[in-house]
Every structure is written in C-alpha cells, then in structure tokens.
Length: 485
Image (cartoon, rainbow, N blue to C red):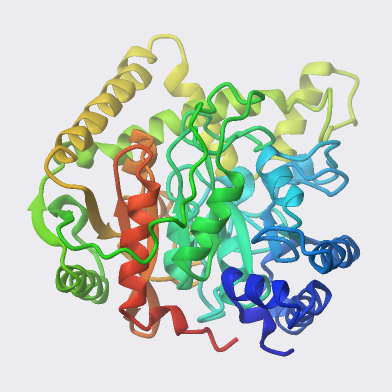
C-alpha cells in the first residue's frame, strides 16, 4: 500500500475498477504520505481528511456497483483559488483568511460529480500573483526535488503535491504560466487549456481575460483524463465557449509522423540556463526521431509579451480586487470610526506586498491620462502577438519551446528583485495573451533539477498537444523519475 500514492490516474482507475484496491486504501496512502512529508513540503493550506475519507467510502460503493468513471475514488488537491463549498478558500491571502464559500467552482463541481476525492486546498502565491509560491500570506511551499528551492508559482502547491506523492493529481490555474511553470520546476505535467474551454465560474479572479483552470498530473494521459472531466460549456461563465465535448484521450498512442513542429528562436532567451537549452534541444531531436518534421520559426512580437502582460494583468487585477473593501466580506479593519480610513487600512493590512504592487501598477495604467499610453497600447500589442501565432500556425501544427528559462531557484533568491522574478515567465506569458493552449512535459534534468518542454498549439488543439506530449513521454524515461522526498 505504501506505493499507491505514486500511481497515475489511469493505473489507479484500473486497480479501483478491478477492485484490486479500494478508494479508501488509495486515499489513506495519500494521507499517510502527507503526514510523512507535508511538514517539509508545505503544499497544502487546508487539509480535509474527513471529507476525503467520506468521499472515498462513497466512491467505493459506486465502484462496487460497477459504476463510476475514470476519476471515481481518485484523490485530488484543489488550488486555493477555486471555491469549495464549506471549505475555506483563502487565495493564500489575509484578505480571505476566514472565507468559506457556499458553492463549488464549476470545475470542482465537475470533479466531485465524477467521484473524485478532495484531500484539501493547495498553497499558492497570494491571489495567484507570483512565480515561486513565496508570496503566500501563510507559508512558502518547497520543491520536493530540493527543499531549499521554490516549486514555481503561482500553482506551487499543486505541482509540489503531485511531485511529492501527496496526491494523484491536482487542479491549478494559469494566468501567465502558473500551471506550466511550476509543473516544469517540479518535474510533472501541466496543461493550460484554450481560454474559455474550462469554466472560470468560482475561480476567484486575478486577470479575467487571462485566467484559465488546468490540471497538474504525473503523465500526459492523466491530463487528458482530467480535461475530459472539467472542459465544456458553462452558462454561469460568460467567457465559456460553446464547444462540443471531446474525448481528449482518443488520439493518445497515435504516432506523430508527418506533424510539422516549429521551434521559435525568440524563446531561447539570453540568460537561459545551458542545461535547459541542452535538454529542450534534445527533446526536439527526439520528436524529430519520432517522425515529426522540425523547422525554425519566428515570432517577432514575442519580445513585447512581457511588457504587454504586466500592463494588462495588473490593470485587470486592479479592477477585480477593488471589491475587497472590508464592507461585505473578508478581512475588515475595525479600529476607526471613519469609513474611508477603514477601507484604506483593510487593503493595507489585507493585501501582501506583491498584490499591492500589482494593484498600484494597474491603477496607474488605467488612470486618466495614462490609459491610452499604457493599457490601450498593451491591448494593441496583444493583437499583434496573437496575429504572429496565427501566421506561424499556417505553416506548422505546433510549437516546441522551453517552459521556463531557469530551473528551480533557491528560496528568497529573487524576492528582492520583482523584475527578475517577472522575467521567469517569459516563455509562458505569450500563450495566455493569445488565449492558446500550452502543455508542459518533463524533458530531462539540469544539475539534478527538472526541466520542462512546452508544446503550444492553435486554439482548441489540446488533443494534438496531448498526442505529441504522450508520444514524447512514451519514448523517454522522465515520467518514471521521482523526487526522493
């Protein structure tokens, strides 16, 4: 039973369905691993063992009756930015420290309706703003491959919990790379779906035109299974697209002979660690060996993506976070008789430094006299970036890039330099700006730390990206690598 917590979703489902194991045993194995390593990894903000064991018992009844789907009885960690009915949802912020939602986010509801087992809520950068999971108001999360290093962010808890064997899979959110980058740094798989493919209802907003929910898993096939469960139209979300449901596992196992893959030169940025360049170049060579044709391509407006993102995202965050004023819910400063001072102090003490920084950036960019110079220009640049992708996808089927220009860095190493921290997302940001899908797959190691390869495709090409990622994964041994936590 000691190894059950390391199963993939597909292996766990096969053993659950054949009754080789029970969901109760699988859940207890994960809880046992949490007891053993959570004190060092700190990937959770809230643990829900009672809920998990009750859900596991219900799942076992379904399975015993020959019912249930591929996620029935399978443990999951939910990033603490998604509403969970009756369970605290803090966004890793003092502002929402005591907030308990009365409803589930649609993506969470879809997992629960399939019989998934919720182990708890995952740590994150506050309000999903950060690239290292050090901006949590409560505690940082450590990388299971090296406990002195960060797991990436903002879905650091999601990636670390899977890499540490604490859960079978997790659900994160990705605004500028927040699923893919920590997946790369922790040696697991992270998928950011096409914008609008997965409902954002119940996802507490950071930047509404960029946010998207996605899975963090051990294998590419597992990401396809989770996407099957959470994708689909939701009338509660005005940005949800009316896509017909697909089976994203259907083309896994097909070869990739004849596929045209582009390698954009702009993603091999100055300052990239040599070990990452080497690992990704080897991965490209491996894909070529599997029958794909590889060619260099250019995305010239990519160089504007970072500046574009850090105007649009803070502007939207400034508008979204204006609702936290201490009047209706959340933290409220009470030691004054003055309403305006109460609001000011609520925001001063409720928000951490990174959130405050981004709110101020966004408020400035949206202010009178600067809107046209900054926000409007950023939206125009966004259009050019999207057009660049559209042009390239006329010549190639998908793109192959590094996920991150660096491997996991030491805790505290970059907290004093926000610009350096922002630069870490240079390879992932353009995907969110253009609303495209992106998949990060482990592709090797640099100085003993995991490296991720990113696959980018046109809108709604998840099936293709998963097929390419699965073919690559099947031809390599990286999926078997395990952090010695």
